[in-house]
Image (tube, rainbow, N blue to C red):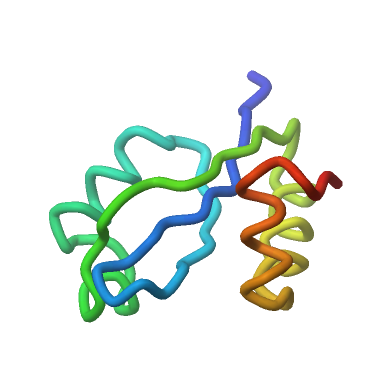
Length: 86
């Protein structure tokens, strides 16, 4: 079975961004919103989902997640707004 993987950006209650990846986007988002996700979103809360992109495999998604996590806030905002692409 071919899994689809997703990289996503959340806005936290304090205005910070959290970037993550999963193969079950809906249930993973539920975990974050219910404070059952990762330590960061449990501590900062989640305001809303800002961005999602789909990948065909785990390796590709992991690489993209790491790439985005290394970006500045301004570059992430350009990605979210559609001004920046892969």
